[in-house]
Image (cartoon, rainbow, N blue to C red):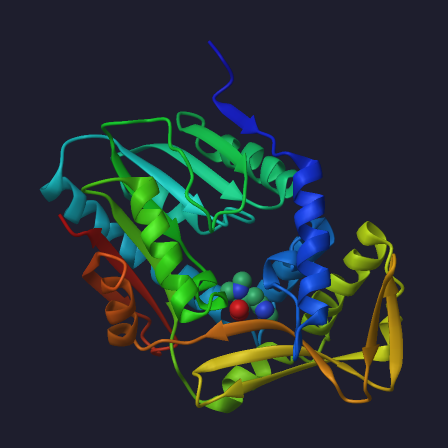
Length: 324
Ligand code: AVI
């Protein structure tokens, strides 16, 4: 019998070229920007895991506390819908902590595919998950989860899983595109379960993205460390400061790296000039009321079947069903 933990490796060179092209294009834009997916090299994934353990960063633990209730109700729901086995596909899987309540409570799940951009991190997480659930067939796939992805298994019930409010890191139009692509990947009659951060008191949002231990600042700056190391740029790390604030009009937390002085950065033959106080916009984290999210998902052909709200209203989980 073959090992049920399998891996698909990407075209590394193509990924490097895309990283280079995106960084150059992003730093030539006005205002300058970098895509948040580039936070997640090995070190960046580690920083993110540390963020999830912080007292101030409520999304991780609030969702984790909510998921067992969601999973128990989902178990009843799926027993009413189908007698078939369920294949869960997690997009942007990271450390695979969130899937555990689903695997513990939804009895029909017999196969799990984890898709993540950070391959090394994913493999160790898949191996660890296998220790907890030895009967489960597990696939780890290193890929950009925002793109359509060919699923091998046909004729099964597919449940997409996208926890952590990672959908909030996409602009609304991109989120609709992602949900439409996911619908294409998962196929007709499929389902999707998403964790979505809610709108809330600005002060709580501010604290969550400006933690007192400075981990979020390291996470944010790590993208510059990565650009220096992998692309040979010469960013002076002390020349940039982490900043994050809630943009009420847009309903999102923005993260930026602010240049503390006038400076020049080079990357190969490319030259980027920074004015004092100019920023690189590194991340958006959109927050949605459940009904706002329902409307967004509808634009991608999904129907909101159920949603759950944490007791303190700080986080929501929505089950979508693909419209026939
Ligand atoms: C992964 N994502 C949902 C996190 C968020 O809250 O937007 C990333 C993060 N950025 C700063 N802290 C955490």
